[in-house]
Image 1 (cartoon, rainbow, N blue to C red):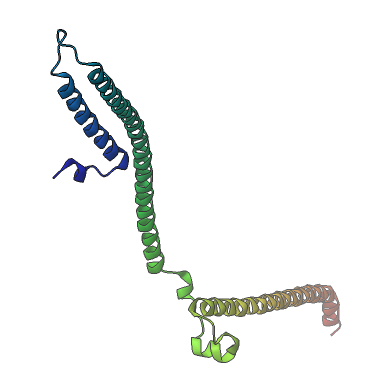
Image 2 (image 1 turned 180 degrees about the horizontal axis):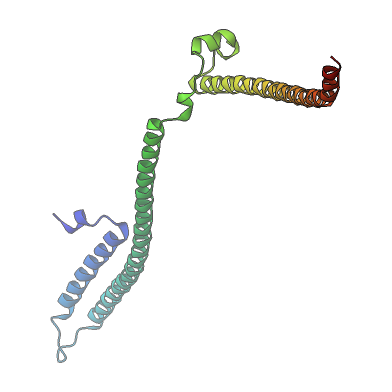
Length: 211
C-alpha cells in the first residue's frame, strides 16, 4: 500500500508531491555541485545552473513551509470541529437518554392509568343499548365520548332525583310542623278541659247536696 493510496486529502497530497519534487531537486543539485571543490571552481555557466537549481529548491522548500503551516492550521481547525462535534454528540446522547427515561416514565403512567380502578366504572349507568335507544344523537360517538355522555346522563338523573328528594323533604318537614301544631292544640285542649272539670267540681258537689 503506497502513501498516495493512504493520503486522500488534496492539500496533503499536494504537500507530498511538493516534498517529492524538493527531494529530487536537492539530489539533482547535489549531483550538479558534487564534482567541484574550493580548488576546482565550476565555470560561470555551471554556477548559473547551480544558482538556478538552488532557487528552484528554495521555492519548493517555501511551498513546503506554506503547506506545513496550512496543514497545522487545518489540524487545529479540525480538532476544534471535532471537539464541537463530540460535544454535540454528547448532548444528543444525553438528550436521547432523557427521552428514553421519559418514554419509560410515560409507559408506566399509561399502564397505571389503564389498570386504575376508575370510580366511574362503579356507577350504575344504564346499558349502552338503552342509552343509545333513548339518545340516538350519540350513535356515532366513540367509546370515550359515549362514556362521558352516559356519565352526564346519570348526573342529570341524579340531580333531578335530588331535587325531588329536597321537595319531598320540605313537604315532610311541613307535615311534621302541622302534626306538632295539632298535638300542641290537643294538649292545650286537654288542659282547658281539666281546668273546666276542676272548675265544675264545686257545682257538682252542690247538686249532690241538693239531691
